[in-house]
Structure formats: structure tokens, C-alpha cells
Image (tube, rainbow, N blue to C red; front, side, top):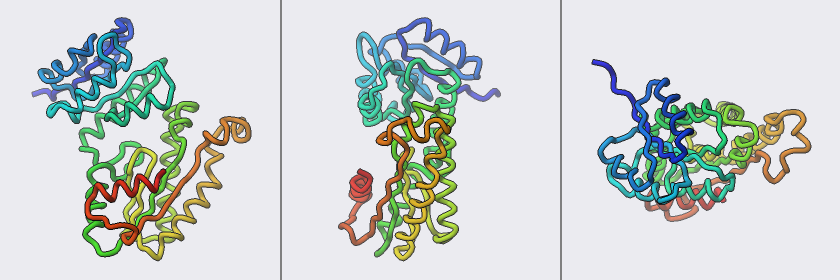
Length: 284
């Protein structure tokens, strides 16, 4: 018996673009359906059960944000990966979509190969139940939550919250391949610091695409933080082409590193939600 094809819904009212995407993804081996009107998306998902949705934000009847709200509210559609197609480059549009539960965001005009890789990564993460990040191979999602819950059961623990700032801006300027290379290089720096200062029991995982948690011993946390900071400050400029290292982009939008230390004594951590709220405050 042949293996069932993964199914993609394309929600796009631009017929020419929609037909191009249908033809392209069918050649890639996917089953592809196009839905032209936002009102039909939720009902269509109930009957056809897609594995992923490519969703244009701008629609004449229901915009992509409202469609996402409805999909995330449905028991059978809450976990379907959603990739936005959008005309706008405003960061607030991206953040609004991510807050509603979109998995990724690509701006028109886009390269179809980039969209293909984003689709592949989103489907891979969904297939792995978000256990590992497809770019870095680090634990992600439920695996990280499980480690955080283990911390909550211990009388004492310490974690470093590590953030790579402005990766989205870097990706928009230099592309997804370059940004993925940056992520992998940064993870290599993290691992080297753990080998030099940390221990085999230390845990490193994703909190978000560019935010990480390093669970380590209290006596090592400050040294690890300083070692990682020093290495990254020496390296970040070299991710840019030579012509852009001094002039562009502006310093406020360049790659940067932030870190903080969270300890069990910092608050009364009685649940995973409380711990995650403290992590979020530390990142800001």
C-alpha cells in the first residue's frame, strides 16, 4: 500500500499565485487543495484534515488573523501548522500573527524554494511533535517543558536564559540560509562553552526560535554566561558581509546577545506557567 501524501491547504485569492503554488507543491509530492475564501477554511479543515495551511493574511471576507483565531479555537484544527503569506514588512504584523499561533511568516515577493523549506521544517516539527528544532537539532517544545517541570520538582536549580536578538531583521536582509547558519554557529558556541565550563548533566534547549534555556549548576552559571557573551561579542559581526560590518544595518538592528540567570530562590515557582512568565520577563 502506498504511503498517504501530506496534505497542504493554500488559502489564497490570487488565482495565478495559487495555481503556481498548487503545481509546485504537487510536484514535490504533496496533496494540495486551494481555498479561495476565508469563511470556508475552518469547515474545509474539518472535513479534509490538512497537515499544513499556507495562509494569505489579506482576504476580502475574513483576514488571516481572524482565520487563525478560528482555527486555533477548534479542537480538530488547533495544532495544524500555519505559514502566513503577507505583503507587509511591519514587525507588528509578524508579532500579531505569531501571538495568535502562526508557525511561520514569509513576505511577498518570496522565493518558492524558501517557502518549500519552511513548509518542510514546519511539517517535520509537527511530525516530531515539536521535540527537536529542525535547524539546530536542540530539544524544543514538549521536551523543554518536561525539563522545566523536572526543575520545579527540585529544591534548587539554576538556568541561563540566552537570547539572540534581531535574528528576524538579519533573516529579512540576508535570507533564511544565512540566518540558519547563524543559529547553528551560535549553538556551536553554546556547546563549546558547556564542554569547557559546564558538565554532561547540563541541558540546552529552545524556548523560542532564537531564545534558549541552559539548565546548569549554580556555581557555573555566571562563568558560562560570561564565556558565551565574550565568544558571541567577538563573533557576531563576522556573520555579516564585509561591506556591511561597519555601515549597514544600523547598530540598533544588528545581531546582539542578551542573557540572564534565573534561580529557584528568585520566586515561588509553583507551576510551569509561573516559571515561563518569569523567563519571559527576564528576556525582555
